[in-house]
Image 1 (cartoon, chains in turn blue, yellow, orange, brown):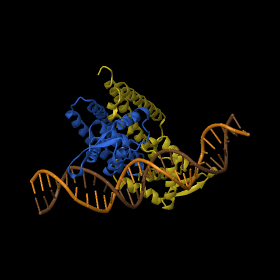
Image 2 (cartoon, helix red, strand yellow; image 1 turned 120 degrees about the horizontal axis):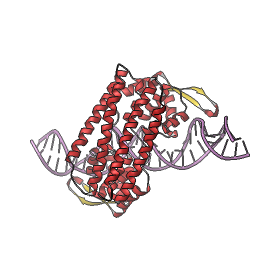
Image 3 (tube, chains in turn yellow, orange, purple, red; image 1 turned 45 degrees about the horizontal axis):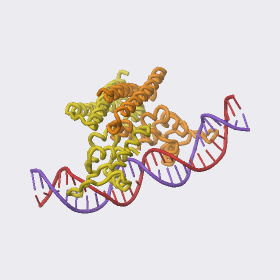
Image 4 (cartoon, chains in turn red, cyan, green, purple; image 1 turned 180 degrees about the horizontal axis):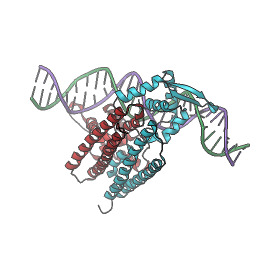
Length: 172
Length: 172
DNA sequence: ACAGGCATGTAAGTCGTTACATGATTAG
DNA sequence: CTAATCATGTAACGACTTACATGCCTGT
């Protein structure tokens, strides 16, 4: 159950509302794990019921800020230490590559060119983030390490997709 | 619904039994999409009921080989053409990197070193596959294109993980 | 004879998506 | 005053995991 631990991790760093967490998933975290607001609010309720998170402040418009309790923080750490990442992979874009032979070569090439463009855009986004990055506390440094992975992997994707598109050129 | 289309794609290439498909997911395809046998058998039943796949042969031990019907083949092609890959990402190993600040630097470094080793192993596996690769029909060529992505991305992961482990060195 | 791998299926429960539903605050 | 954004929640349905359940064939 990774969502629980993703939420607890963010709530161990600083208080956040369900809305905040939803936005963080949409922006930075969404590149490694996605979650919809309905899932987040439901999970926050459960974390509170289990004593892993608590409401620390309430604001206008019904906003509630949660923070991880000591038990909650201990639970993320336990999860990081004692469990191995599940090998479950889901990469729909790459699954489609296995099936490209079912299309005309021109269509396959177009798909790969769109992939190249999408990844180039994502890479540019990461480059902007990296250029703007500053901060030296541990969570920021962990973020920078993850961002570096994004940079390197998106670069590899862009180069691969361009190479792959060329494989489906009329010539070949 | 990617699983349906992954199955239909394989059944459009050649007849396969549920067992075969399960094995293919465990081996090559598992790196981009995972599926358990229970999910596969259930889905094959549905595909047959909808006229997208049909049983073409039966063997000892209850083995049944399925093949995509014309309607089934048309359905994968429609999916490839008319739908965009869903942006849903789930990469638990990278999610953990965002949370590494919760561990001692030594533990974080150990995690990243294990990641480097895991990806190096996967890379070696892909390199063996690439060395042994031959075949010139369209499905094989699509496989080779996907394999090239695996090679490049695993290489990027290995280099990143080594760099990242160094970030958590005692010195820093 | 028996171990290992082949082969298929069902059931219960959890996780995740999409749609529905409501309302408050702020900026223009 | 009104549109956009903030903000939270529930319900229905579909996807996925884990466990249970069964039995056949082949090689040693």
